[in-house]
Image 1: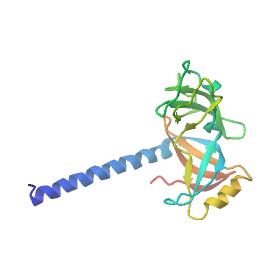
Image 2: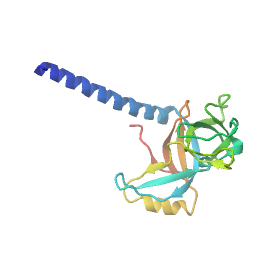
Image 3: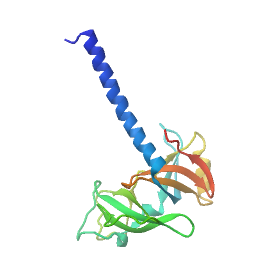
Length: 193
């Protein structure tokens, strides 16, 4: 049986562990947003709305469909699974938007050059890479939440003119959405904390 003093100490220790864990998650995301390499991706709209979290835009990118011919290391008869990481090398185009130039399963054979960036995604389960012409990696940046009531208006505007997402990419390839941009105008920017 725990005494009152021991119970209070145990509860405080548990609370400190929980606060520490949440702080670690938030600090990791903030570090990517603060220090990550910034790239601009052209977005393709998909329908918005989440009953629990409000308006969002579901985003697709040019890098959401990687031609299998860009992948440098596909073993014969390879089937992808959810735990198959893919590294996609990005390079800026003449229009300022970044696009894929090469891809590898696992790790890139060499680090990205100064004008390039590597983003890490995961390939959906069961993709037959010998027969597919493209694969669809998930990078964890496919949704952007907006203030209530603004999702539909932005979604409709995205069908008329190009929008972009400014993404911060950490050295290990993890990506976080930094801002939603309309041409040169930043519409929404993610706070660090």
